[in-house]
Image 1 (cartoon, rainbow, N blue to C red):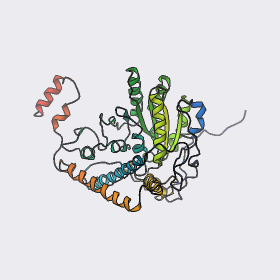
Image 2: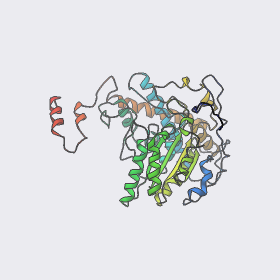
Image 3: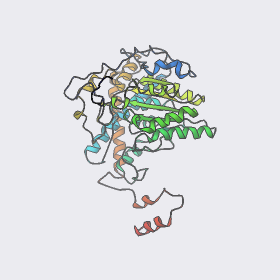
Image 4: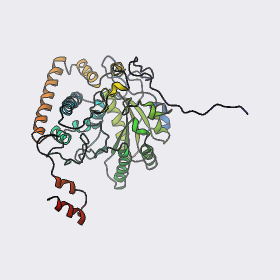
Amino acid sequence: MVETGHLSLHVPEPAVRPGGQPDFSNVKIARAGAVPRPEVDAAAEDIRDLAYSIIRVLNRDGEAVGPWAGLLSDDDLRAGLRNMMTLRAFDARMLMAQRQGKTSFYMQHLGEEAVSCAFRKALKKGDMNFPTYRQAGLLIADDYPMVEMMNQIYSNESDPLRGRQLPIMYSSKEHGFFTISGNLATQYVQAVGWAMASAIKNDIRIAAAWIGDGSTAESDFHSALVFASTYRAPVVLNVVNNQWAISTFQGIARGGSGTFAARGLGFGIPALRVDGNDYLAVHAVACWAAERARRNLGPTLIEYVTYRVGAHSTSDDPSAYRPKTESEAWPLGDPVLRLKKHLILRGLWSEERHVQAEAEIMDEVIAAQRKAEEHGTMHAGGRPSVRDIFEGVYAEMPPHLRRQRQKAGY
């Protein structure tokens, strides 16, 4: 019998720590246009390689190449750029508002704008997203009023959720945006359940689930995949791999699976990885997955390979766990600049037009902010009524709550 040493655990380590040289050598990037576009009804085992590659459309010269290109019109592309620029400007103003004490909390999308803005354009009215907290682009790209978003962030008297949610946890049934849950991963099983209900009712609406790389370690993620694969639910299962959870690198949640997309293969779910900073690629892959769901072909798992440039939230200091220059070394670039370059190459945009658009969009965002602040901020102006605490919970209010409301003067 061979004598062995003491047992020990393996704890994954990031490639580099603060103060070190950023290293993304582990990110294997396929050449733009090189990954094939399979038929929508392809079986998971026949497209296994797509769970390990990265689908890209825009090359480094700004050209749209390959079989996933050509789905968007000139107007669609310009609108996509404007949506991403709007989300970025919105972020900048709300981040500043938090620093000024006008709201308690904020989470920005810097570097990830293409994921939600492009995905929204693949959906139809009535489809339902079950988002996590970094998909505000789903609302921006669907023309949800920025004033309403800001009212919710400020929790003022015009907050559509009446102060019942943390800032940035929006909700809009009309715009297919299910209430965000602060308990991560719960929305994944909810999305699958909603999609199953839609199928049971013989409806035509599909669902989209959203989760970050860190939250895939939660059991809800795996439960959702079991039900989605077993019942072939009409749902798109999105995993946003922005390299970092709250303060831990994505390897902690990934384990030895190689990619997050590969986890879908174990459940017989077709899985794809896409360049999350490529607006055209995100839109094309989203359309492919949405068509699968609408044709009753079951779920698709999509991993968006992107990078969280900013802090996890206004409560976070990323310099404590990653090099300050890491975002500059990210090999897939900036989604706004990449789409801008593509439009300029095609003669649909210019540097001058971009500067003008930035100014126009910032003016719109500031105007919306002023209008929202007329209704109050965290420390000034109107707030939701205390009466709202008792409303909208029960169809018929129980006697004990009615008494409490009366004691509160309502």
